[in-house]
Image (spheres, rainbow, N blue to C red):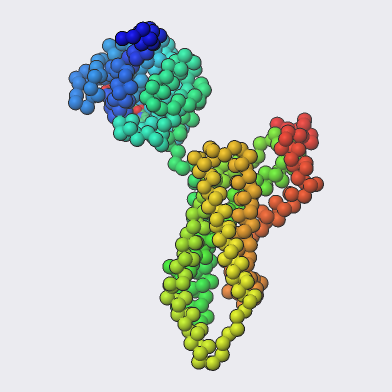
Length: 461
Ligand code: NAP
């Protein structure tokens, strides 16, 4: 060994690979999975259990002792046991005094108990330093190594040193600790794994409601009305025609609903003359799920594109084209090309293609992997400026689709206008209000308010 290498050895800390023993109470699914991962990461693990007999399920290299014996061997004890069994810890209070107790537990319902499980544990063992961690990681993910989706571990606790010790373990396991503050945050951390797509609820329920409404609306206009008045059976419209009407309508309305809360917020700020007062709860919630609304809108727009692609091969469409040709041949009369209609049809298609292209671009930039690589100004530019351009193009696409039959009385059935006309209401309102807000007499005060200026500072909350 040369001189240099011995110097390197001397510089290396002698304890670099030595990890402190960790105790885990409970040899259930989670305790074993966490124990297995810890042993892999170089931690000596000792289990505290009601039964000290080792089984083949216990990770190799781990000891199984009684709770009292195991607790004495480590400064950190992970409580991998359900909350309802925590009272067995009370007689151990003396041994657990000064130890770091890690609460990993979850509940079956949101806010199931008045206090969080971690706070309850702190009450049961007042001398211990309780830290909440690991509850958002599943035993299966720990065991199988498929932690990509849940690499973040939320950690909270009142003792900074204890929290740091737990965060060091989290890091050593290849996970990312996220400090959530004091033990008061435990309730929120415990509720987190119980939430079911919280940001998607409103967009999905809204699209289900609108889909149902427009389905029956189109059914009445396109299937029931011709059947009643002309005895024509257009029930096959249910397969492609009606879905292909509903999808663009939903895409347009939902896209407009992405921008409507921003416009409402601007009006509220202008009215109040400050940005320092909270928006109403419903508006806050609406703003938080704009990305999800936009993605659902994109899904409907993509379906519309797919449905449109199959139009030329539909039997009904082929029959209509051939019967028109035959009727021209029988009458020996050729219809001249209607340039206005050709213009309308081409413009309608071009606007749709451009609108859809920008729609996809918006969807791509909302992906975390893309949005993380653009700065705030670039993100705002894409989501706001390109977003409004997309809304303008898609609204124009629908307006041109209506073309010259837009206000024609013959397009009304049972006084019901075409469904696409209803879809234009929200986007037109959003675009008109946005256009008004661009006027300098409104835009200037709004910009100042957003920079922190207040009309009546004494009234802000
Ligand atoms: P589990 O398989 O039912 O194991 C719980 C363990 O608690 C049992 O194996 C037992 O260990 C011990 N225990 C049961 N009754 C007891 C009692 N009366 N007194 C003392 N100890 C008792 O449950 P788990 O899935 O491992 O979950 C354990 C904790 O981790 C729970 O709080 C859960 O919310 C949390 N968690 C679980 C997961 C997961 O994916 N499973 C994910 C995150 C958090 P001994 O027989 O060794 O005493």
